Image (spheres, rainbow, N blue to C red):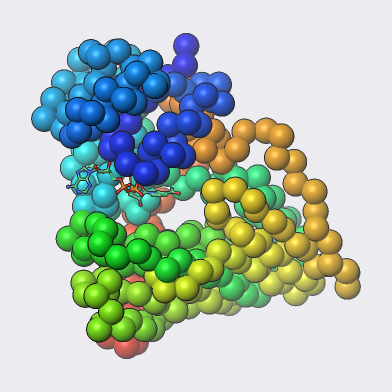
Length: 335
Ligand code: NAD
């Protein structure tokens, strides 16, 4: 049988990207919906064939414990609500998929990891790019030293943010561009490097007269230093568009642009003095399906997901160090 997901939060990402992807899944299905808006429950319940008994409000959410149709709770809420709903889901005896960024603070991430472990259930973070074929190929090329020893990584992620939304309210988002989109630069640097950074330096540029940036940052440029000597120079922005990375080795480079978008990835590789655009096989599961079915298969086979809660926690610890570096204007050790 396909494992049943309860979708918590019927906002933009849930309804436009995640829910339509289940139609292409082999191991996962939508079993329940959780929303504070009864009209959304009725509309999406009808659209996705979710019976009324499997539609919950935030007040009735904990009753999900008694519903055998639900194996996994997928938290797709504003960031400040991730820890509460992940922990409630773990306590209800369910496995959890939680959206990025995992939570506003490392302390909350630790509590989420502990709750899942205490319940003996899995916790995975929605790092979809790890299931995107071009990204998987880029990681493999780095690991097999197709471009020699990695020397530098350059990556930038950003978009001009629209005003008046929870992402710009520090209480709900936990931070600005870094938490929301810069985290893709951080993730890419770490998964391309294949080693953990030992030091970070960060510089902020935010126009505080811009009403969008009253409580959160706009731009951060940060540099990660890795044990091998590799440096990753990363950009996070809420005022300009970027979605790219380049891994540069002793014998060439790999570039993805866009790198972590929902679709349309394009890769170029420079090796032996020639630049090529490798043909990446995209006939298999896309990144959304790959992510959803990965957790279902890990539960079936009792394996740890490739992006467990601990991986989300690592990013949040580094983001806390990035914020600290930016405030204290000095390099922060991560060891
Ligand atoms: P959204 O604002 O469209 O949806 C948030 C949902 O939470 C809405 O349905 C809203 O009604 C609900 N909600 C419940 N209580 C709320 C409250 N007190 N205040 C505001 N909203 C409340 O946001 P989104 O873009 O769907 O983002 C949701 C989560 O998904 C975030 O964690 C975000 O980082 C993540 N996300 C991930 C990706 C990705 O590619 N992995 C893409 C977009 C968003």
